[in-house]
Image (cartoon, rainbow, N blue to C red; front, side, top):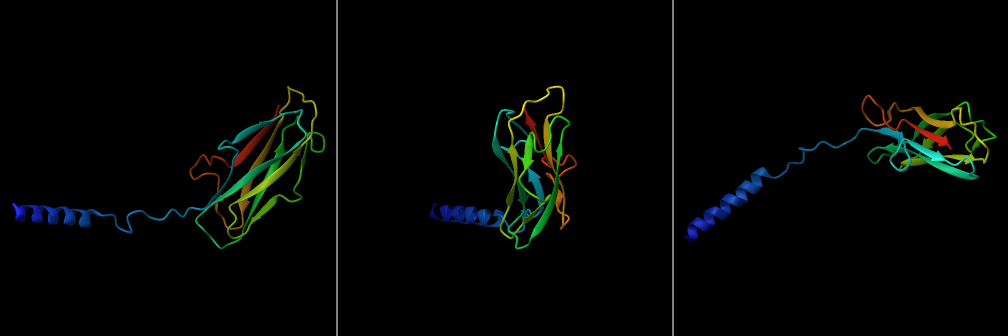
Length: 154
């Protein structure tokens, strides 16, 4: 009986040894891409009565890297919003530089209280355009989710 327990234990240990995970089983996830969101959503609202500054983060999803990447974006206003009247962009340029170790950068917009015409498009889109390294824009896949953020003034 003692020998059976010993063989049984040896059998279990050998099974665990031969079925354990190898280092090469799961490849490292190294796809690099940019996306923009607020609370995991691609659209948000802001009150037409608000005098506030909105911060909308652009994220660089990548393993740790020591490189600098410059991302370009555009801000497109619907026909119901006018810069200087309804909003003001607080950045002078349409590019953001991600330094080594930085994985999110803000786009800041000052919202100005102003009545809206409900028959017009009162949205503002922050659209990610490209970057100097050729990394993907939006989540991987043909839909490119979170490649733009829509902010609707209500």
